[in-house]
Length: 259
Length: 259
DNA sequence: GAAAGAAATCTCAAATATAGAGATTTCCGT
DNA sequence: ACGGAAATCTCTATATTTGAGATTTCTTTC
Image (tube, rainbow over all chains, first blue to last red; front, side, top):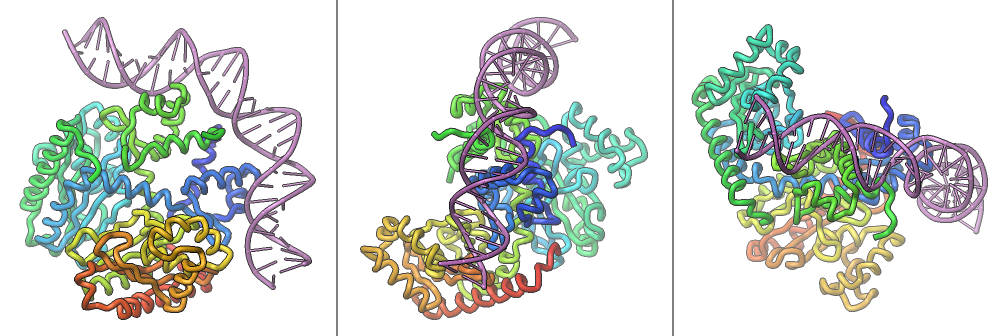
């Protein structure tokens, strides 16, 4: 654990609240982080006043309303989500599947919108769920279209993961796969993220360099037998291109904000 | 602007990102907050590394992936949401309306789950949207059931708002309204939050003192003519009671966590 | 591909705010 | 109203933060 300044120590406090554990008592936090009592309470008080944490009736602390509100803000004013929503609905209405939009955050993939018409809960992928960087059509649809100078470091850094996903034995083989995705305009994956589920995805651009997100569709493999990958790729690519067009226009003419 | 310690200054930075404005450039932040360049960049770097902010291709900053992930965590492990979901679906399936769960955060009401079957977009109320404290059935359903020592300060602090909402001219009149809500077990409101929309709501308890949330249903007034308020109150109360029962049991037997 | 311009980071000393031990107050259930 | 736990306060030594300016890194333009 490197030297931490006070802000990092506060953030370490927020880091405690994870999937494994969403409620912590002050004493447990002290044990875990080694902060003194007054210090911990000072931090807690400020975070609580700002709404990042709330105290439960049980005496413990959890994440607070501020988190929910900030996510609401993001959702509500995210043009990507707004423009993608009709497409998600259209796609899920046409066949039992999950359609999702995954945003590229520079070194992390996160689902930001999804619709699901498949009865199979396995395929569902809600907003907020992180997506692995080395596997899946969505991830490949984004990485493949990154500008060279960003693509190479990411590929080399994740080479092991990509190899395990079966993309190829060495760097060149993996790069070939990405080249092929670029040529086709979309990526296909067979059960890489969820076993038994086929995924197809195409990149979304906003006019800047490189994709900012991807539109993906996943279907249970048995259902996908009828919908062949090429056809799905076609549909996904077209929708992704339309969304990109909207974003591009927004960017040029300035965002028509709020409402 | 009172004296602020460094943590509060960092939070003030996050406060900038509001409904009005979700993208800020470093220079704009400096102007707004008066921090020096190195200080601002130090803050930004840490917040960015922690994922609370991201830099946009345009050079500005916005809220980052961490926010979305934290909301996902909360949503996914919120027993209130989990237990309420089937009821929301059941209620919205029965008639065109919006059913929502609003959590009480000690001094703030926030919608945490909602389903909508009404074609009228007016009635929709998505997760993350704050709810006014002085108006609406949901708010009243919660406040009315607070323990005395919490109820009084809140009512007196918001007396003006409550008066404007038409609850009564003075403190005693307002308290009478709440007493009546307690007697009925649910609250009814006519167009208080959204004009032309009728709301009915009942409190949800988890076994501690005071309600932790409310279940609400809103319908366009014309559609509500057929469903009289008493009947809606009945349904909402029953669902709220069932949800309370689940939460109570969870609390006693310990949470069956994760999955 | 080089050069100008902008953006981000670094250096370092002064000063200021922070940390923590222990005392004290407030809160809560009985 | 009481007792025990939870949260906050006081105060000083000390470590940390701050900010001006220099410097590096990245980006855009030619």
